[in-house]
Length: 273
Image (cartoon, rainbow, N blue to C red):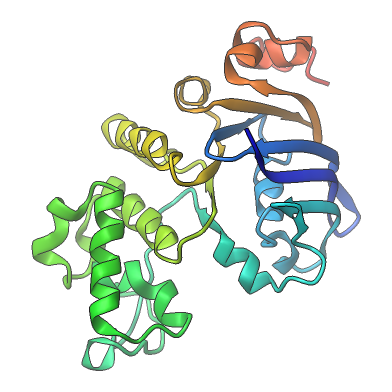
């Protein structure tokens, strides 16, 4: 099995505070890799380094290598290209707002809080901003991506209605569809179910299992049951260091490090330091 992402000696800082301390791991293609660890251990910073979002924070910096198919994303590749190849789904559904949605259904206007863009406009936003103007192509892509996330039948009759009227679980699937529309190779998911009810969370988990057939997924989660259910591999971070990385059954059933066992079994912070 080939590796899609290779991380070598990855370090990250916010000003003078170092939050990642030499992370080394390789992410297999067409798999779900869960990143777990206590709050503040660097999980979200880690995945933000995988698509160069960390560097947009004032005072933030990165050292080390992150390679996609052996090409270092920090050497000679524009951040825009990196973020097209490596999509991101955030903790809360980030539906795009607009003041005057589109002119003739196609042109973005100045942002405002309400109302939100339509479902269709949210899904194709990345394509539009990348220069795609063919209406038929955009409509086909919107339908395809909404089908991928299992949402098409639920929204096809209100595709041009405001997205803000959907449930939280539906909104998160719209955000996943939007990430998929630009055809990324890797999908990063930062606690995508933390704001969802159990039923919506199960649907997202089912979706992750389906999507890994085509994409490589890196998932940050605080939910140990979720990590055990959906991931093929698990990385345990603590205080900015990679403590353990391996197949999920190995990490959960036979952890090599006591700190991993203590965290997974919920024995508090004892042994984590």
